Length: 300
Ligand code: 13P
Image 1 (tube, helix red, strand yellow):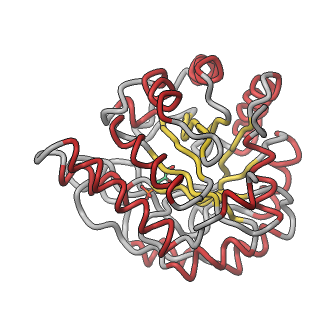
Image 2 (cartoon, rainbow, N blue to C red):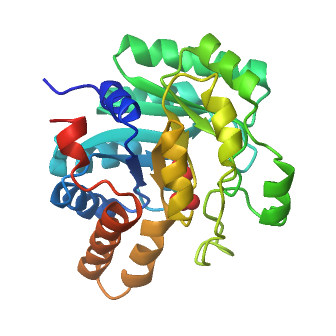
């Protein structure tokens, strides 16, 4: 019997070890990600977000689950459903419960409900509803509080201005209330990271080098006693990520860093594009995230 994903993240959290989550906007990316995790003896999550089957070529939630179950190696991997928004990046309401139910039936082992565009009270209510549903099936839940920007269309303003103002950052006392009242297993926090752009106008551009407000994270970690999640993991200087892990932010979501090499090489051939994903994943695991060998500790 496999150890549950929440137990694995709890182990990583207690030992202050990174669990990378890799997004799969194109189905052929899945196999080289699993292979790189295995070859580095690293534990990580394979993830797909709703926008990746709506706006990219992950095709569907079940297509990703089928591909995952074909190539998985559960010594090193688990399948996670990333961002199911209540209100999406285009400001449209999403019928999120059927998506969560489908994911659970398809074999996703953890899910994210993203109520971050709602008021605190509505975010708590939606997240609690998903926690009840998922926990009844033994599936772990990630919630989000605060605004990790970047997926929206159009200009978001200067990064430095947003960072300096702390606009959208997770409020520590709200985070404490959110965790207590929802029963979520992991909390995605806003502390300076941003998502890589996905609009056609910007998605090929080099992502801004985001920073993290580590003292702010420390204040959240004093009142939140569960693993925390960093979205927008691409392009953040290594020293910030290593510091964030020390304060309990151990799940690091990475999308753009693998998507761009895939998109840049797939015109030549899918084989070349898969190789590019493999090489980039390997380099991230070894050189940026320091997780070589982590599977032996997290899932021995
Ligand atoms: P990046 O694309 O910026 O790495 O962000 C990925 C992410 O946070 C997915 O949830």
